[in-house]
Amino acid sequence: MQIRIIAVGRIKEKFLQDGIAEYEKRLRSYAKVQVIEIPEEKRPASSSSPGGRIAMEKEGERILSAIPDGSFVIALDIQGKDWSSIALAEALSRWEMDGRNQIAFLIGGDLGLAPAVLARSDLRLSLSRMTFTHPIARFLIMEQIYRAFRIKSGEPYHK
Image 1 (tube, rainbow, N blue to C red):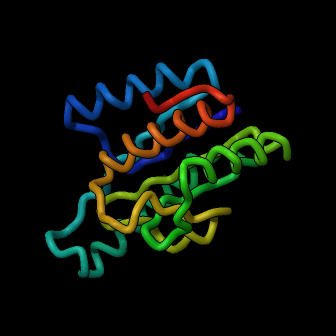
Image 2 (cartoon, rainbow, N blue to C red):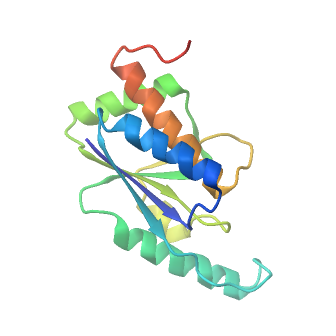
């Protein structure tokens, strides 16, 4: 299975870079994982201005162009479905059985995901009803993907 994390922005915090790199390493035995960073669009100070909407749309266009054809697309969205780790593991198993070998998780910038990106998604998934920074969201989804593979493989995760 090929999993892509397509995310707006770079991770600046060393502790998050290290954590994400650790989960990338752990995931190698389960799937091919690729992180694609989309540059943040410069925007005015006020995100409610028309410039903020335009910036989000430009980021959205770059996200859409990074999605490989045939991918099953999951947009991380606070309004998305609220799944457990077990539900994600079951879904990964189901998608694999259905021949969906390419999964793309999308993480927007600080303004969120453009409407065109949400419309392209096959699933909108919430990590929590809480709000996280986008770098934290990237770390969390990497951890949850790793946990899901451990669960679906019948391997222990909690100790």
